[in-house]
Length: 440
Ligand code: S3P
Image 1 (tube, rainbow, N blue to C red):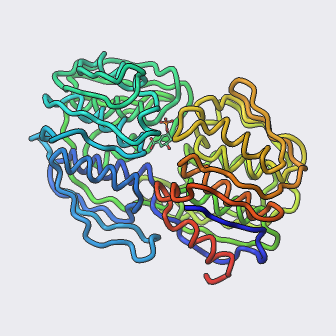
Image 2 (image 1 turned 180 degrees about the vertical axis):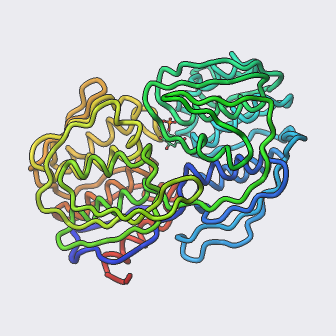
């Protein structure tokens, strides 16, 4: 699908609840599938990625019942999951299709590592190009038999079995790898400890205790003691800060805008982008709300900011804003001076090579961007000019380009815009509603 956009003719204004958090929705469905008993989940993101997780756990024997569909895509799904508990998952018939979702495949590999069944996990063209050895190698160390395709990618075959707890020092900060190992650790005898070089998102550590699984956290390490079976619980999923980021970016760039995004997860491991934008001088107000699902939440109010200044984003900060780099790069085109993103090499192995793609897109829009090794530099002060861009089937690129199109002169056309369905199917509608000030 082609998306056409032009400079915003009016400000964005009003209040809108962005959909449920993708990372938390995946985990809610997966942990509920592993649990003994029936879990009741609300506010679950209704998107292609989460649908992939729901069908994958169904293929493994969990009963997933969608009790109510979202009316306008923003309130989320109400889902009841009857887990496999102590009986374990059943051997699936045929390969499990994880679609575009790295979280689905990597977390499920961890789940399956401790059960004596055979499964093959695969996905779409993008997922089958993403590295899986970062998770299969440590799972093999724990005792699972795992085999990737020759290039280290999916399809991945796994036969789980008896696991012996181990300690891991991860070479990269990856919440997917950390989570897979902690989930496998629930089946291993003894303490499985995972240490990472920088703090990646910690939803697994925050959520497992609700399912009756204790997680011990010390600095950059988390550990679980197994074997232990999860127990069903109820989960309310907060709104997704990564989806909110696109509306924040749009409001910052369009003169006169004033937008409020309520009940967003303000988990510190997820909102590095808000800290960076504040440093750049963005007009942001954050009002803390209640904790939801073990996550701090709150309302984010963002107003157009005429003068943003460039900043340096250090490698340490990157895991807390890893999915927001393309959007921040677009915002940086409007800032005075340069914005340097250090240590962003991981972007090359996301749903696309986001590092090359975002630099190419900024340059195609007549902005200034350059990549050297794992650093991206965006030079502000070059007014953007509309052009035709390809999302490469990557949802976060598609939405970042749509934000750029609101600020660029002339028309911007985005090919393969349907990629947004992976995380935020209602994005174009929500943006339009804010532009038409149709929300109070
Ligand atoms: C995710 C972790 C991150 C992130 C992805 C979702 C998760 O990936 O980029 O969109 O839900 O655990 P890595 O674990 O590869 O850093």
